[in-house]
Amino acid sequence: MADHSANHDAAVTDNFALPGVPDAFDRLWTPHRMAYVAKGQSQVTDEASCPFCAAPQRDDETSLIVARGTTCYVVMNLYPYNPGHMLVCPYRHLPDYPDLTIDETAEFAQLTQIGMEVLRDVSRAAGFNLGMNQGKAGGAGIAAHLHQHIVPRWGGDGNFLPIIAETKNVTATIGEMRTMIADGWATGTERFLTKQQDNTPGC
Image (tube, rainbow, N blue to C red; front, side):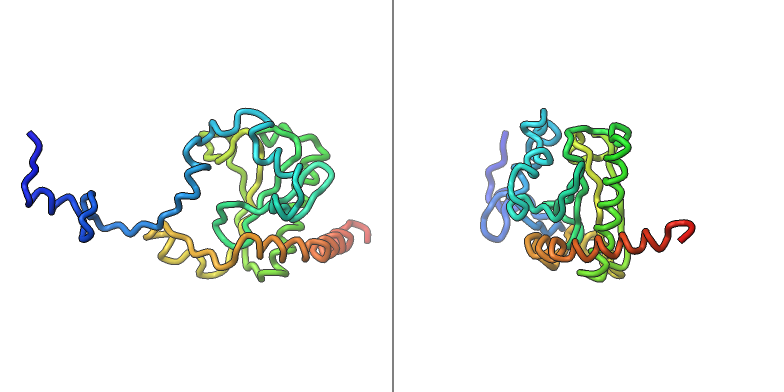
């Protein structure tokens, strides 16, 4: 039989008389993410439902695209670990890194390299995490469409908040970072190409 005593009611309500047993956790409420989280991997069933296929069909500002190549493009991550967190994606809807052609692989890598050059310039990034999560078991948020993360890092950015509180302090909006990176892309590309020429054997 359920306990409806006053003591029981007090034990399962907070100071505002709302239900729920108090615990030691503070909560950062982000209900806007439910649209992304609720369906999980099943939200992408084909090219028509894939956000990485849809993004290039819109203008750069709307889709948060910072650069377009011939076979691949670069877009801001909607859920960044750090300001400037970008994704490199092939235009083709394919899940696996070995599925890329030789030309796609070359541009995929080159856009990653240029992205690093740009972030060093516009945000003084001191380091980077680069990575691809392959497949559901590998932790890919959207396993159906290959994408590589470019995460800029700075000394001390891994403070107690993400480690203890599972909360990340992001110091610039995605739109602001997209503008900075897009505006700096031409300069970063020029710097990268000059570096490549200087590193060419026989020069």
